[in-house]
Image (tube, rainbow, N blue to C red):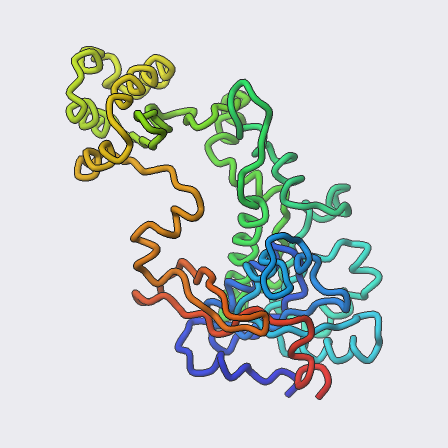
Length: 385
């Protein structure tokens, strides 16, 4: 057999144990698909070109000589380096494709032609093939390189992100790639389920542009249904108030008052006569219309105490709220610091901490079985046997 299962993926009890996944993808969206499938127990082999995945050099920050960007989305995979333009290497890779249950790739049309990827598809027509594309295939954009930032710009996501009187801004994490990767994962799992029912669902595509636009949800539907073009509102919500930051004496904290009942609890908790007198604000529609005046009233009230005090007051109230944390603060909060979401893994880059899957299976969070690998670290036994 060209593809013996990794010993670390045997007797795991995980739902995808025994599923073989070949991951040809680079950078983020595609590798995220492979990583999630690996987290769920699949045996994943990442195939990189001789020059390696470009994300290896997207630094700083760097750890063990490789960009931490690479470490973020390549756990639970073995790694081989392969030049598909070499006929003998191509044959060896075709042998892996023949045994694969899922293939993930994000080649551009020009790369598909040069590397003869369509011939690999023919090797195993029953394989679930997931293509991550810049946009829906056949379009002009589908043939052009794309990245998370470009998708955020084209999708309208940047158009609704930022202060009302400021410039459009991107989301602070690669949201377009993440959403596309999650759709790609759904495609892979859907294909595996379809195979069990012998349904002809083998070829899937997760286009970056359309996947990102799907994340607009209510913003897009408001435009499509009513023709209202959403605008940037900073941290405010287009349909809910108060739903954003309020200013305490020492900084900001967040309120997310999603219902009229929650607003009534907030008013009762604050015990402010001026706020209590505004009976028209008992209905969300009016609060949204008067959001600026409401925010001024809340900033006046919350400005009387510091954020720590307010968090203690709000804690048992049933009013949805949160501190606004930076990344370090997020990892230091007890829910994360005292839980098992972060794990230290060993790798040839060195030992480092990383996030595990957020998913729980029968109440348990799967451990990371293998850290990210060096380029070509598993060629021996998989390609050179």
